[in-house]
Image (tube, rainbow, N blue to C red; front, side):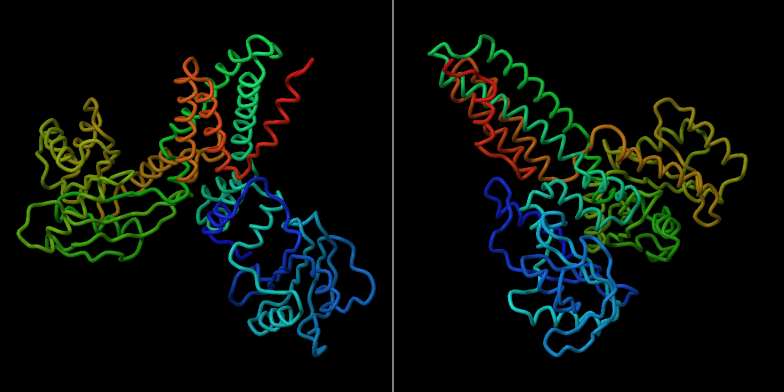
Length: 490
């Protein structure tokens, strides 16, 4: 498909208003099924010369095949007439195609030699060129087939690595998030039209009473809705990019052992020597369908060693950036009395992270007698206001399953359910534009009774901010609303 993350921003940089098809577009082609050996490869062609390419390479001397109907043909080189492969061809006439243009797909065998031969044959025909990154999706956007939020959803779907990411991306690609923003845009356009009409025609007494009061209510309601939308604790963005989970604690508490246990592989070096880990060790995981970037860090302690001091600094920096911190404590260092242990742990937690989300992991429980271990867990859970506690042994794997269940629950809470409620923000640029939109609506309310022209500019700026998310906003639509909603000149 030739889609990359950068293509969305290319779209933004080239957008000039309302999307539309390119009259003189070149015909482009590319391998759409990904590189590497495979059973079947799909080569996509889009543009005005697509029909010619199909006829010449599939040996169709008369009419084109019926639209969206699979046809088995010999694929030949249009210059040498050599048969390159035998495969399936499909014809998608405009505007009923992904790009909105005439399009063709060649379904061929996925060997590198076959793919190369077909691509070279397409490139030998006049008016054909290889597609740039994201160009098929760009043409779909320019033809009005996809909005920018749907384009971003498509990109996220292609790059999704976990089940929850797939669900969120598919929901966004279906247009649900775009429809929410389009609804807000439509309401703002109406507000803009009413304010502009009031400014231009109120002196002629051609505007109905109460128009500005309606605008005031609409602006207030819309600002409240957007502010609620922004208060999502970054769940959608976190799900898209991965939950930052950091393992932190004192030296030799078993942090690297916990990382290896969760990963089920020796990702970090483990030794009985305190201070073995000097740098941040990262690994990407799928925990119950949610993406997690798990980081092991240096033991938090004072040290004269310059390398270890840098490791501790990086560890504290990573803890500050974490969505969730797993604070690992060596059970052997705890007081026997549960109340004293709770006080010790509270002090330890405050020294590591005063405010962030965390999960307390008491490691090396295999070193404690059975009755002391059970009493410690039971009494700590009864301490009022105490954080979640998991007792585990990375040596025997005791308590590991319960710990993973709690970890999954914490990660799920941080990401939320991608299929429930209002669609969440998934991109940092959405958040930035919505924040600008809120500030612009506040400008309207600030200047409403002082200078209506400045207040109207606030609505216009808010509309522009929303348009930068969806990729669609135009002055013509505002004029249409003015003449539709008001009997001006009656």
